[in-house]
Amino acid sequence: MDLQLKGKSVVVLASSKGLGKAISTEFAKEGAHVLISSRSSEELQTTAAEIKEVSGNQQIDYQVCDVTKKDDIEQLIQKAIDWNGTVDVLINNAGGPPAGTFDQFSDEDWQKAFELNLLSFTRTIREVLPSMKEQQQGKIVNIASSSIKQTLDNLILSNTFRAGIVGLAKSLSQELAGDNILINTVGPGRIATGRVAALDQKRADKLGTSVEELKKKTEQSIPMGRYGEPEEFAKSVVFLASGANTYLTGQSLVVDGGLVKAL
Image 1: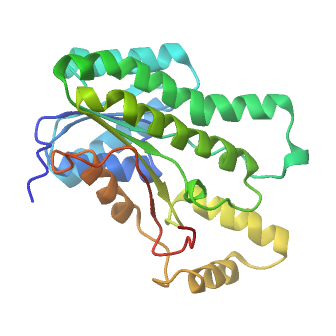
Image 2: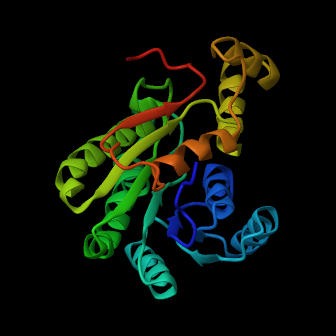
């Protein structure tokens, strides 16, 4: 299947490692011009070089960007436009807020999580829309969490603001359809990333068990019997952002090996 991504201008947020890196790599393999970003210039340099080597695509650039800072987001999108003339694809992504229960968090914690996991997405979308509307086409994919379908224990901040991402995307799918701009949300289940490993360790410590035992028990609850690989998740995202997707918009999908039982 031709995903029609060769030469397309793609911006991926929070992409020096984890799911963002895997997504960027898959776009690169399809021949897209990929602008990656994170807060660390050193990590970005390393990641850009690795993606070029793995994909054979030299059209990879990077920009330091803290997604909680409005100026950084504006500069990121402007760099993509200066480089490629437009933005064809926006992949919204951000690190997760800290784990914990309701009574552990202050107003400041809530504000930080809002800025990281919801306000950042609204800002990036605002910046790319003029370009996408001008060319009467575009794809936006928001990376969230499986909590968009079923809340997760001890992750109240994530549960709250990931749900907000779904509301944002569903509303925008109605507003932007006339401009042929498609927007969807994808939530990872237990994908083998550093973030998931850290959460597993924290939960294992809380339960007084080893992380190996915790992972084994978790895998037993996944119908496919294992954690997913970042590349598996990334390929689902790339399809939604590709030219092969011409009619799917406003949807919230989970890539989880069957873990989430909610409808």
